[in-house]
Length: 74
Figure 1 (cartoon, rainbow, N blue to C red):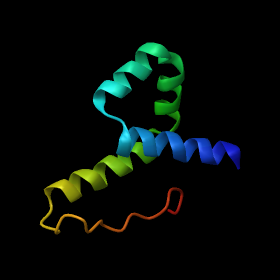
Figure 2 (figure 1 turned 45 degrees about the vertical axis):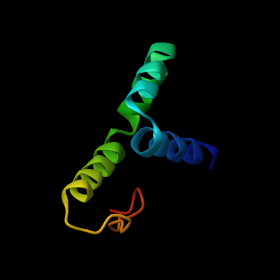
Figure 3 (figure 1 turned 180 degrees about the horizontal axis):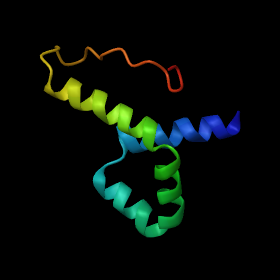
Figure 4 (figure 1 turned 120 degrees about the vertical axis):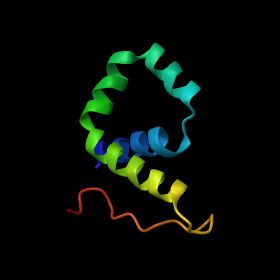
């Protein structure tokens, strides 16, 4: 359970909240851990980035988020 929570925390931080400067700082501080997490969760991160890209380029009114299935529901 704790591992799942850590996974969600990292993915949310990386995909939604962290600025590029924060990501660079994290990579400088602990490059091995960041790279390991990026490798481990690359599928989920790519999925979220695809949805974000679609949302940013769509004609949906801002504030209306597209439905994203929970991770691991394929």
